[in-house]
Image 1: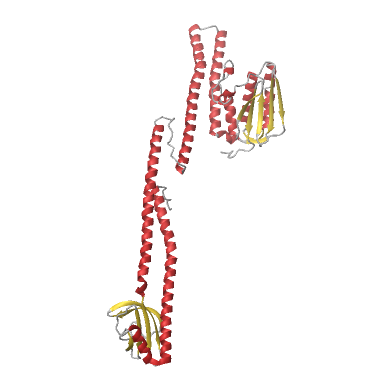
Image 2: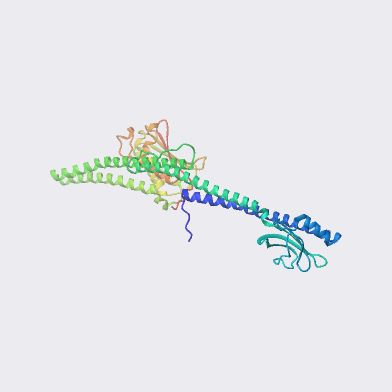
Length: 459
């Protein structure tokens, strides 16, 4: 199995250099090939033209005239190694030109070729063309291929220099990028160490300009904000739990201690035991509410999602609370715009609506009015609104009352531990919605908003 390359500045640098060299080679290779083809074609065309010219001279004016023309052009001395012309007789003896005899390296072959020819005792690679003339004469025209060697060397040197520059610039740029990244990563690491030591208010340093690293830092800082908020919430909840449990547990201990000390009559003892059971039930209700909230926050309750008509659920809850509303002298009405299907947990939805009704009955005026309305909103969401005519909630407390264990000034004298609206908000979030609190003038309208379909509902 091929292991993926590690993401690092060095890997990026080497990859960049490799790609640059491949691009350079891709550009240079066809250029080199085309250049070589053009040179070969030009060389062959020049040799062919010389051969045709000399052959026509032989045919028109004879061998003597051809010898004179060749000697005039190249002489009889083997000094011009760049160009060779030789006229030989049938016995391979040189008659004119700058070679003494027909080269044995060529043999009797005619046409174009490239061979090593011994010139002045030194082998030279020549591009040549040879032909047999009437009467057994042989004619050779050749050029030294080294004539264009300087251009080839210049091209190769330029290509090598370009590759070296790409390599050096790539490595230098990679080292610079690596050094810059390591410097910024070091700053982030130091900030992270401070956060790990408990300073949750510390944030990762932001860098100037727009970059991917800045985007990452901003995302991490937002995450740290959320973590700090959550940990602060956990601390607040812990403090609230300790405070709310201390009172009933202290009362329970006081009752039991009084029973041990006073040893009352049987009937009074049963009364005290009943009050103690009430205190225990109160503590258990707090833990049950917290466990339900923990399950909802973890998303484990989505396993119970089914297709449910929330209007029918709200109607059933309203029917159950009708008797309680009558005991308080309140009127409880329910209206619905029809069947409102959504994917959700009917038990949690019923509990959330019941919590809203509990709050409404708790704070509604005597002989007041409570209304439940289930409807579909214009944006496709489904809403269950519970309204009352009580004192309502101040605007500055509307967000706070959805925090766990928070109790506003208007709820100080009423029973409860401050988890009702927290549970409703958690159920709404589980169903892809929110809990909205608005004024009813007088009173409060608490609206449970849910989406008809929740993604990943079987999570």
